[in-house]
Length: 414
Image (cartoon, rainbow, N blue to C red; front, side):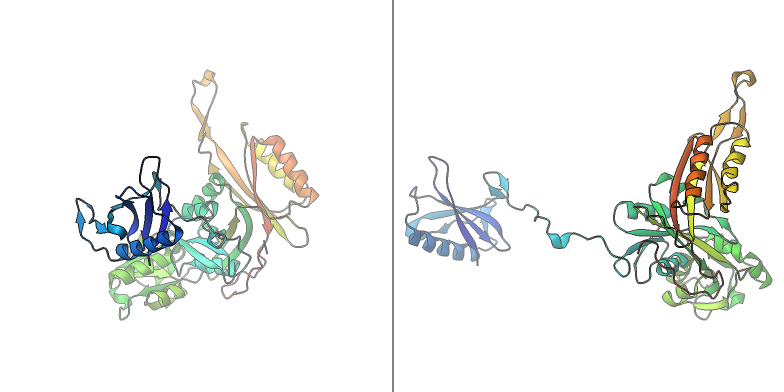
């Protein structure tokens, strides 16, 4: 039933009753008799009558307004649709409730983890290994996964940084520097590639193989030994290639992807384990908005990035010596172009000719920032560099790097 409320009118104007009919919006009812409604009993009676009149209104209107309806005591009620009272809008958004807020999730099933690719991608499997029972969120690009964490759409991101056969994923190293996320863990995932095709398709019918460039490179020799005369084409990701073949019904095209992708997209496995090396392992890093507290009760790894503005290789030698003198093992060193200053020029005597390229250096070393030797090493490194940033200090993944490994990584921020 419609609800009615009495609205005090400005001086010299008639009092009004605002009728709110469900599904019809607010309507203002003006009494044209010029007399105020008197007495609470009469007011309640008028409200009931008016509510029933509003409920009985049909779609008919006069000049864009609802048709007049008779009121008690012979009054003529002019019902005019309005958006509010005294110029104040009635359809305001509802206040935010505590139930609308998404609380910070705990480790486990509540955790939202972003990864690049579609369901069935190796990154999805890595996310499940890093955070068992998590809510995996697929992203179409690496940068989208970074932004999902920064914008609180996801709580973590699991992204690949290097492969034992294909080398580094340079895009993600550049994004680590561009964004302010922290590395809170790592996971190493054995990669087991399969050659997938639509049901009923034979290998002799295949003229094209599509997959991620890394997957194509990791299976290049095996495909050649299989005697397949096929064109190799790059795709955004492995599972996405399988999805593309399935959705488009391509019977002359095969995809290199995981066995889970075959199950998800209804494809058959023409060949299993086609990677060139059975020790094919991809290393993923786990990213979060906040760093974790370094510890010394288990093996830790620390990742840094630095640049120097002095000429020659002596600076790089001094930086590496800071770790060597303290018996700190380096597990990786990667150079990437300095995007803001890619080329350094010599002095005016040589007429500004380009001398050499400028680089950023990414270094991983086996030590926790809680250890004094690591702190002293970074203090010395800072003396020789113009820029130094710690990307994260996090537990190492100590699971065996074998193709049959299925052990779970303990969360670094549990």
